[in-house]
Length: 460
Image (cartoon, rainbow, N blue to C red; front, side):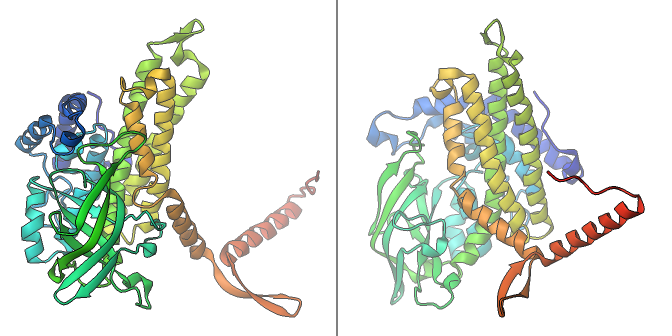
């Protein structure tokens, strides 16, 4: 089995215990989870109703095996009681391995959205909320959903989220529609963590939203339908549209208090984006493996596909892009370890922008190398690509992360100054420091030209 790719730049940050666990995760995923992926699909009922009311038995067998091996809840850091105690860098490398199999994240109780939801409960939940919901999730007895995206607004700007949440005595009443709610189709999903607008009149838009816990059996809550991702329904977990119609929830179910929604959401999503990115890198590695295997078995125009210049270019560039992406993500994970997710916001954004697009491209080329077979069910490539394409939208679309990263980078350099034009003064944002540095360098260059008697450059 190929060695685990641990970049030398972070090698000294990986403890002996983490290395041992990485090896166990690698063996479990490659030898037991990857072969089980197709069995999981085969065990899903083709009957529409049964498809959403049962779970393939092989998943429970894998979970039992993972617990025997001590590969359970690896995501839970030492900040929490009973946590596995791995750093974000160490767990990120484990996520890469988990990305190689469809079933492996859940087999180790390390799957989204549960890990993020458990982190919310562990970090922000009160004692009663932890007892009722966190422990069953940690034990893998139930599943959960994070309920945010809405069909009626552009949810990429979370301030637009408008599901109504109004106080009524000792309860809150929820009304509205959400969609793309992962895990909502699963019969084991017992908890919905809902992001809603509780105070639309608050002058600070960052304090208009709250997060509240809604049990699945709450009257007024309905799972309407599963949605498909390029034809894949991802049963039994699914991604569903849900409706809240005069859904009454005890006020004690709120997390932290009114107006704390954005604070909680950002604490949840930072590490989660790292996990998504590293799983995507695992997908890209698997796609590259399939590509290399295929092009060394098929011939066109008298020679192996691997001897065609365009194909060897794909392979070389894929290796460069995968390894470069891994460094970007591990840098973000390390910055979280040395501070927190807020301090690593720019680095997390870089990873979220770069990795999904890179992985989609590698999978697209792997599909191309397989010809028509690449888009069929005979290979895992189409499913992997469909998953990767969603990661360019999940936890914020590329464009939002690009906008935030660009603004932050520009802000690092710019200063206000006044610029006179025709007796008027315009406030202009400019990279003053950068301009002054370039002007200084150009002035020095001209001095050196005179000193060394370099003639002026000819112009076109």
